[in-house]
Image (spheres, rainbow, N blue to C red):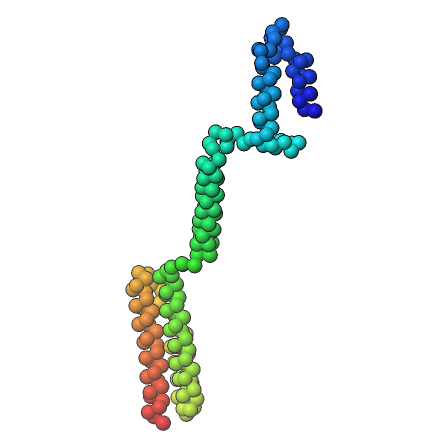
Amino acid sequence: MIDSQLEEQLRDNAEAVFGKGKELPAGHRERFEQRLKSFREGRKDVQGNRILNPIRQVVGKSKLGKIISSKKWLVASVAVAALLAGFVFVLNPFEIKTQSDSLVDLCYYYNIQIKEQAAYTRQLISQVDETNREILFANVDFIENEPIPDVQLSDDDYCLLITNFYENKIETLQNIQDLICTTD
């Protein structure tokens, strides 16, 4: 059906395509039909006829298979690399703690230590006579709530300041505990 339509259009427009009054070269039609027939045998067209892959004709069947498998391997590798990069950048499982994180952890640790020592000291103070009890409670509250000095230091020096500051608080509370225990 398509052949007959193509042939009719060629006949109608033969003068425009090939020139006025010119005939087709000898054997042209036979060569064209032969090429059309071999083309149809090679791969399938819209009607289901088999037509050859032009790339396979040039490269060859085995080389084309290697090229395609190499391309598939490359695409798969790039996809896996993109997936891993996404996990690393989005989820960041290898996050390195910064100095400020260690400062927060250090303060948190010492706050817990101070709260434990202050609670134990308050428990001991509750056993003291009433005349000294209010003064001792006030001192424990002051020691527990005294803020860290706000100074400009390097992170290492600031860690040392925090450690000394809290160690002094804990030592003071332990001294109060010792005084209460020895006076009983």
